Image 1 (cartoon, helix red, strand yellow):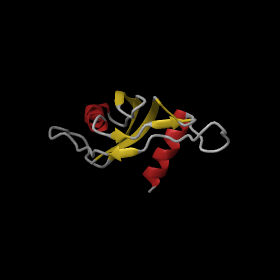
Image 2 (cartoon, rainbow, N blue to C red):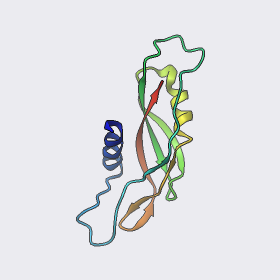
Image 3 (spheres, rainbow, N blue to C red):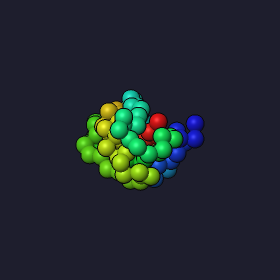
Image 4 (cartoon, helix red, strand yellow):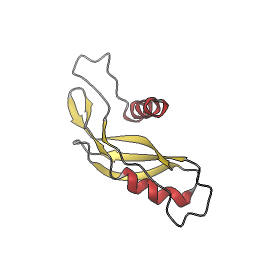
Length: 112
């Protein structure tokens, strides 16, 4: 639940979306339609406790991922695994003033 609240908060901060105060139409952040889990690579030599990597994604007006970046990571050796998992996510489009628009989201990926 904490991660879900954090994700929604991050999406609002990044997209600048608001759901109140607009007379021109509704606004809402993209919603996750499909999520992918990430696992440690077999050859990973570090501590295998759960670690969280924040991945930033650019989305087009349909919600399709167009680019991915590591926003923060406790171990750069896990970045490729996090990016691969993030690329498998599916999102609904971001809506701003009733229109589908491109945007950015930050999603926590937990490596287990």
